[in-house]
Length: 123
Image 1 (cartoon, helix red, strand yellow):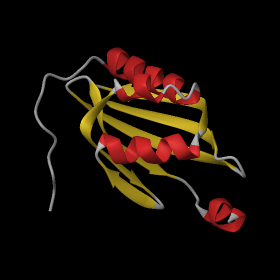
Image 2 (spheres, one colour):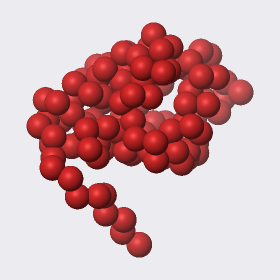
Image 3 (cartoon, rainbow, N blue to C red):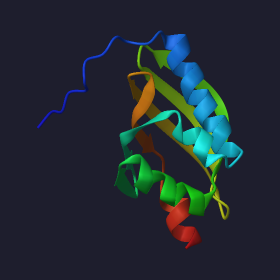
Image 4 (cartoon, rainbow, N blue to C red):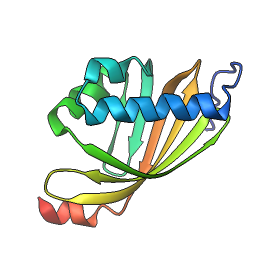
């Protein structure tokens, strides 16, 4: 079943990219209240090792993990932003691709892909 995002006026690519970069900056500073300003309450996180539905569930995990993001490249196309970054997960650093989809100027979906083997081996 294909789900379609809510139709809203698309952001300019620059504005969408600025929003996502501000979100990452807040996450790196562990300012989770500020980071939450950039996401919709019903956001979805879809990752290699699991999913989270809703901002509350996502930030509950992020507060525990305290990842640090080193952005290598950022691309934007309308309401879609793609980041290539190293994520410092504490025991290991993983090169990751994150696809951020914005609705109404805020992050509504985050999909990440990476090779999970180093994470699984570090456990």
